[in-house]
Length: 81
Length: 81
Image (cartoon, rainbow over the protein chains, first blue to last red):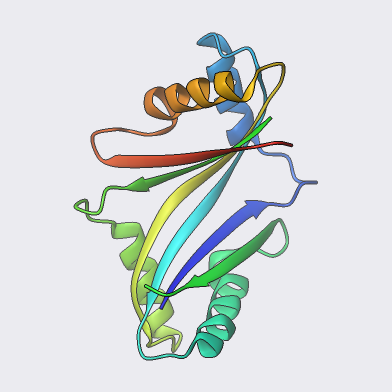
């Protein structure tokens, strides 16, 4: 079982890293870029669990370890590997 | 126009950050986790370009700025925002 997990800053939280990338892109001539947000993406392999167990475990891992719930939000999907 | 961009280490490249997360998860009792790979995820807003222009620009941005083609690979999708 494989899980794809996205962790992104909440929309209300400023993203200075994304802004830096946006400015770098503008200085390289990419004028059409209006906004850049940078997040994290995790691919996790799980062995010996059902899809239901995988969903419960990944939800808990994302909430407790991968994301900082004060400033970040996450979403995930379970895919058969 | 909005672009989602994933940047991941090539499968042949070791991911020490992912391994650290895997060990942290194992020590917290998530024994079913066999592998963790960490990548980057970007959301870019583009204004005043067609879908075709957006695809060409995002492909170039990813190759030249967001990813290090020596050790990383990327994929992207263009979505109407």
